[in-house]
Amino acid sequence: MKKTFYAVAVCATLLAASSCTHRLIDFTLISSKNVDLAKGASFVRGKERVKGVDKVHVVLFIPTGSINLKEAVDRAIETTPGAIALLDGVVYTKFWYVPLIYGQSMAIVEGTPLIDPSLVLNKDKDDSPYKKVVLSKSGEIESVETLTSEAFISIKEKIQKKSHLEGVAVLEID
Image (cartoon, rainbow, N blue to C red; front, side):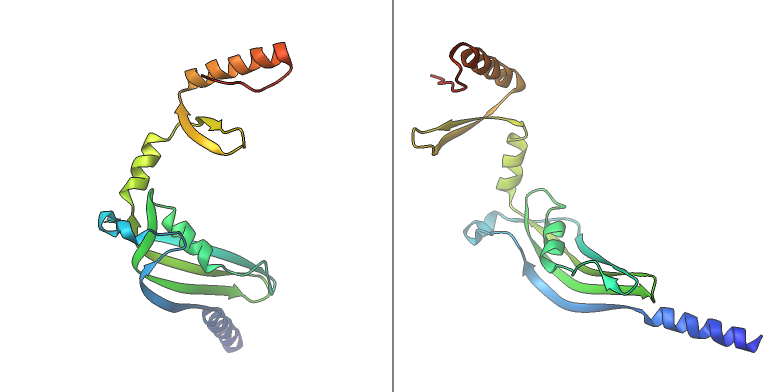
């Protein structure tokens, strides 16, 4: 009976010792995006903290990859529309492992999102999947226009009619 108790106690101790969390750094501002600091006065602090995780699995004793801090930062920023950076946060790693069975290694980033309102406004205006792109003769983009589904269908029909008649799929719109 005592031997069983000791065996269970040793196993429980080994399992408890096989996981850990390491706080790597506290930060004031972190981003993996291009941030135009000249517009800094217009940035808004988010109301709630966000979290981004990059996770790698360990099968038997073989990791399936390596954790990537940039991915964790990207995932945290992308949880909030218009976010460009994180403020007042923390980066830490977490690891747990059941010997010779399974485990996980994670990079975790938490912080308050810093939001560029102009990106949120542009996203709201530009939620149509239909665009008309006008190219110059040299192939450079002259303009991009958002279309309604009706306007897209109209232009699509013109292109189909013209390509059927002339064998060419180019449409010049005046």
